Length: 69
Image (tube, rainbow, N blue to C red; front, side, top):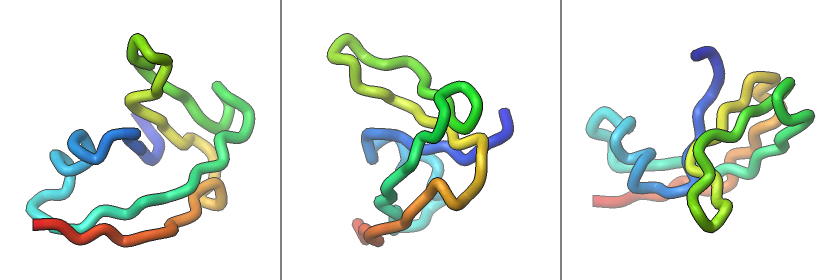
């Protein structure tokens, strides 16, 4: 659906890089859950596997660029 997707685990994000060797590590402001963001499929330890920001890009703060091979 519509939104900007984030994953807690970089191994999931790498699948969406289209061959790039860089990832952004971001801080996210969730806002009101369900209205500004949605968390999907927490694992058995309660960690969120997928987060969708449905509101403004102002909720996203890029902090680091991670380069890998």
